[in-house]
Amino acid sequence: MDREKIKKAFDTAQEIVKMHLEEFQGGFPAPASRNQIYPKIENNDWTAGFYTGMLWMFYEESRERVFLETAREHLISFDARIDRRIWVDHHDMGFIFSPSCVAAFQLTGDERARSTALKAADNLHSRFQEKGQFIQAWGLLGNPDEYRLIIDCLLNLPLLYWASKETGDMSYQDVALRHLQTALSVLVRKDFSTYHTYYFDRETGSPACGATKQGYSDESAWARGQAWGVYGIALNYPHCPGDELKHLWKGVTDYFLTHLPADLAAYWDLYFMDGNEPRDSSASAIAVCGILEAYRQGMCDSSYVEKAEEILESLIDHYAASPTDTGNGLLKHATYGRLLGEGIDEYCLWGDYFYVEALMRCLHPGWHAYW
Ligand code: GLY
Image (cartoon, rainbow, N blue to C red):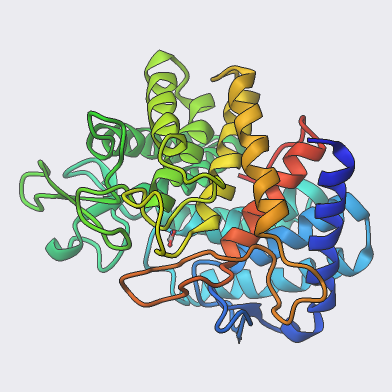
């Protein structure tokens, strides 16, 4: 794909976010839009970091102070969030604190952002369950009804690797690697499709059964879950290099790629490959980032990059918003939870974020993402 096209798409995304900055002053877009408009919420959901992360990318590319200043203002709310424990009793510490606070520290050396992210890493570390060797995703620690891990958590592990690097305390990394080992051993099926979540026996720690929360069925492959697998394995690879992860990555990625419809924007569950079910364009954006990261890590050959660029080009041509649209998001036709009735065929904040991250990666192949 030619660079001009990528740059134009990036600039359009930046323009749309800038047009709506005022609307979200003092708050954040909700996880998903309603009728294509993101409501404004406080910093109290798993998606707030994606908004700040987009601002950091726009700042990196444009050096416009408005993005720097707005992202900096957000940092206060992230620190308050972890200190006051506002909806942090779950595993999503990486999604929330990596693209916001780790990014702030990396880009500006902000010490408070570093300390906020380290507190978030402590919180994630505290969710590790010795019995079963995994980080419990949701709910009260030890609750047998919530004694499970989820595939999304692969993206939260880099916060632990980062915390070990920053502090020299290797227990963060140790927990991340033990979770990784457990998660990959239970989540990836023989055909390389993936479970969304996996339960363990509270008393013995033995693996019990796979289950879905957002997918079509327990045995199907929820599209975004599969995409979290593509990106998550690639992000963990530098900390656990070797043929085993490469092999898993290839299998999980090939499964995703061979279950896409003609225009390469995934249906919300890979069980569907045509028809009128809603799409989850965010899954395709996540997978693009995962493939580009895998290539950067030497996990795959350039044929995968060609496929990633094909997907991204389709997103640009058919799914990207324009500044004249009435909505306030970037990547159309994402789906949060089809059977939960949440954010169906809407903008989703992580879809916007990973779309921008994919563009940034293509603009600057050596660029280091915030994970
Ligand atoms: N991590 C939550 C989701 O993908 O919906």
